[in-house]
Image 1 (cartoon, rainbow, N blue to C red):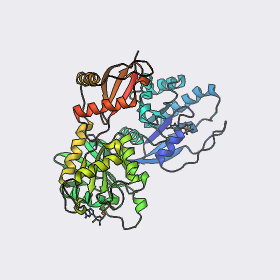
Image 2 (tube, rainbow, N blue to C red):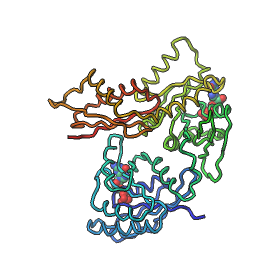
Image 3 (tube, helix red, strand yellow):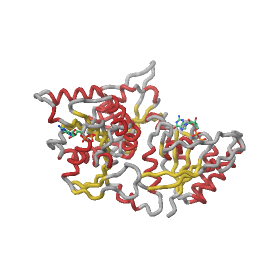
Image 4 (cartoon, rainbow, N blue to C red):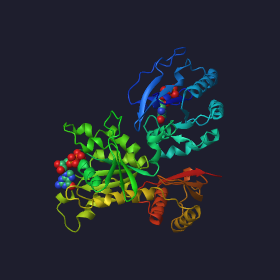
Length: 439
Ligand code: GDP
Ligand code: GDP
């Protein structure tokens, strides 16, 4: 059976090669960009969510040149080729540069083709650059998706989008109302035990999806009518015999699981506490806007008095200050203490991620907040916040329309975030506040 074809179209230097390298998961040698040289290796195999596909680098078809006036011609050819060959077209643009005329021309050709096109705004290297994606709406290709090919940010979301467009995409059909969960943690904190305890109470629907070569097997289960998928369960359930702790908590593998997850359950060992690697993974999940739950496992081994839980809670939040919104569950996979609450907690955090607040209610909270604590002026200039609106869920994202974004200090954003949390909860989910200038 032929694999779906995904074509990547875009001007030189927008980051296509970088994206290829990130997606195909093996280093590909790219011929130097010498004028007149045709790159020969233009087809690459890739896989996502058990769907195999082939990627075509249309930039490798025509000769590459730094000479700017040939670029539009080259791009037309690329687009043509992509339209003829591909099932899905990734149109990559440069989020740092913004829209350029060649982008518009290609957009017109692609739009007219009727093929599925995903507009990929690359070089969105951090959350605060996300506002850069808005101007690409002008290309008329639909919702742009911001990624950083270099920092591997948002690639999971992008690929989710890609495979959705494949013909006979039945495997991902019912995924919409399914909560994807990744259990993350150092070796020996009890992930396998926790997995077994968690699944033990419910009927496991599907396991070991056929056709996977890698160790990336997902487990589907249902609890109280809610569908869940536990990502990358294989390594956990049939406990690896090989003693390779480093391999088993390899950052890269954990990051990929996080990418695919809606909610990340960070498992800590009640005796050992938080490690540097835990912080890294948690930080990544936070930046990626995932729901986060902390499980302190092996609670049975901890000697307790009436202050122990409080002290642990404070220690964890001190270590990972950015994670104060994450609920902490003190549990034991061995004695099953509080294990029954984990599935409900995951469902609860999922609801918090999807919460939508009406603009009128938001602005009531905003004006109350400003009454309590007006925005301080900066270098003699007075910042103004006109109004705010919720742009999206998962994570809840709010756009604040202000006179000048530079005038609003980070600490004031933190204050507003806290007010939103006090008013609405948003437990277990990061929230994002984006400033937008409006004169
Ligand atoms: P191509 O010509 O479209 O294939 O682009 P390349 O993949 O060769 O990337 C062009 C330049 O953009 C390189 O210097 C990359 O390091 C850089 N680049 C690629 N992706 C990103 C990204 O996500 N963020 C940033 N800041 N730079 C990137
Ligand atoms: P993984 O490497 O994170 O998957 O950890 P395992 O689930 O394999 O657990 C590592 C060891 O910790 C095993 O010997 C488990 O029996 C033990 N263990 C796991 N959970 C608990 C717990 O809640 N309490 C106690 N006392 N031991 C546990």
